[in-house]
Image (tube, rainbow, N blue to C red; front, side, top):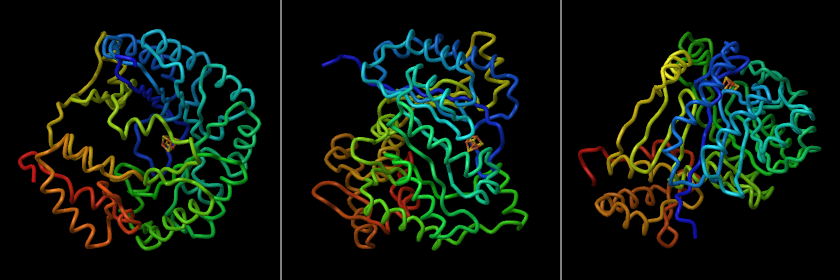
Length: 384
Ligand code: SF4
């Protein structure tokens, strides 16, 4: 067995062609700084080589933003640098997020030749009206063309993102979007309920009274529809927003939920080493200026026991496996008494169930997962 600690690497590519109306991730639509940014991220990876000295990298994830916007030589440069600076596992999972409008047979071949072996495709919807409302750069036809190309490519480990709870949405439209999974034989998908995030066009429309978000009961009905679809079609709901066929779980995200260490590079990327979390500046100009002077624009916090407990609850409660009470007892003994009391309340309300020593959300608990996590969180001053 290897003495090295497993780790994941995340590379944030902070550029997009358009601002999607609902998105508050860090990105810029000023694409002219891409060459400078790629050089800067390469420098950051090299500057932080020492942080990975005791680790073996098992997953690499290029996310964003839109990594598929990057020219092939830029992706090759980043990939080469990661492999030169860090010890990587032979069976590494290497994912690239791609948008449908960037996909072509030639690009797929090149991404595969660079070492990517998993694609995460930002489909969101196959309906043009939804895509226009979201201000996505692609159409339904482009989404279908991209998945057609992928079906004839070397990539078999493919995920698509879908959004539900859209204004004017319906179970029927959602069903048509899910039908795309069958049509293109997609082994993994993520489905996110639309939420109103600060500093987005959607938040502005809601504030001005131009948009009324879908009622909660409609969003919950759509979530239930997805869960029923998964049961019928043989997808495992292995996390609250993630669904897969057997052996197609995202290894990168699963490692993150397991508490595996990760190193994040690029503006806004987060890193975690079990004791400390740090995050890079969410500002391209600030990030570039720092790297040009040999620094990394980074903020860090040391995690308290309470922070680690809250994170343990949040990550595990959202997973099919649930919260392992034996592990909780071993890792957070001071918190056990309080959680057992809360657990009884959740079970009495029908929001959680106990199987052996594992606490899992029921379906009605999944509808309220965020609220339940907050209920179970502890503050730094108290443990029970
Ligand atoms: S949703 Fe994706 S493509 Fe759209 S702005 Fe956000 S990061 Fe960019």
